[in-house]
Image 1 (tube, rainbow, N blue to C red):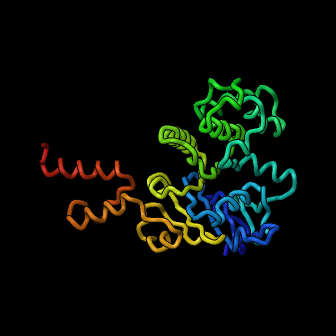
Image 2 (tube, one colour):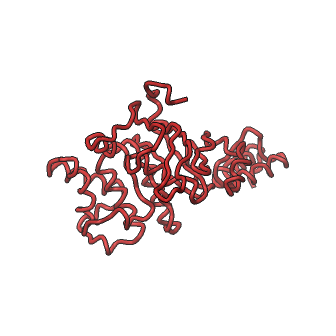
Length: 293
């Protein structure tokens, strides 16, 4: 088990080892949960409400402390002293599902600058970080805007900007697409892809199995306070039973893929992870047969 190791491989950025946590009312949040996040990867955490996803997130940056088990970050056990938690939270950024639970300043600029000032940074450095963070989320023109005038989607971006201003290595988002319409979801996805391209490791919770399949490098399945499976996203079709136990279907594109394979229209080794990718494969196959009509 992880707990017998003195250090983590450099490829593992965050590791939870047999974490147990119960809330004051006696309800179990985590029940021997083990989970590893690889540096530079995109990760989706799937599970029903109450499965422990948010509790995991609150442990990753020290908002909650495990009652047993160990959490490792970048090869070191988490230090729960005040200075240790400050260092951890400068590396692990958490974005809550509801932005109103995270934004508490009057203006966008004030809110985004709070974290860097709390690190003791000087004014010039804070201004640079705030400007860069707002640019990264497409909110540069909103620095002086009153927060209460923002849309729900804009508030989510401000929350992300506030975390980015801390220059984290790992960004964790609890249901980031919840409450957003299609256009706002696509805009937020572009932001996340841009952050990943900069080397930021991403971990998010979602109920959208189709999105998780096409976006994530790794998928982690939660049930009853435990991570019951961690897998490379292209292998998701092999976990139909585990998904069914979580009340989740296979992604729609997998059902289409299996139907086309049975008809000889798609090769076994072809595993499209989105309907757009599937259509491209079919069009390529059609053109390869010389059917240009």
